[in-house]
Image 1: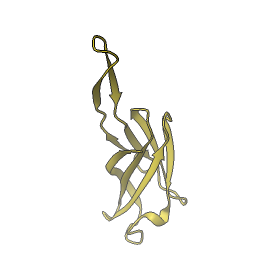
Image 2 (image 1 turned 180 degrees about the vertical axis):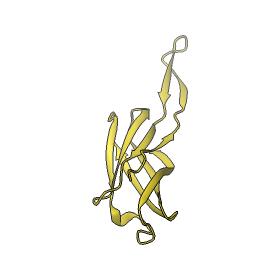
Image 3 (image 1 turned 90 degrees about the horizontal axis):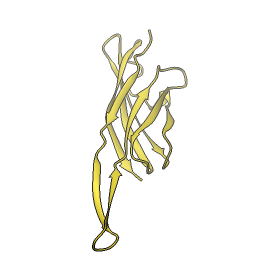
Length: 123
């Protein structure tokens, strides 16, 4: 059974700052906060690959999330990961190794999953 594509989003916000070039002609700068989404694929023998997609900002950030996999027998396996996305880079891939998931012996067959608790931290 294929695991559904897992997605989570961290919202983007805009900040405005006024930097006066001189007293008559201020420069207004729009700074977009870093934001991203995380999509995780189907679990395999090597773990689960998750793609981090930048949806806002352009400076370096670290994305952290939890992946919860629900099994056919209603048990759950949980794992957590963090991955840094360099400034200007649009996407990055992180592998979550099998060993990083809890309750592996309680899960019969992975059925579905979700990304929880996504946080985006500026570097």
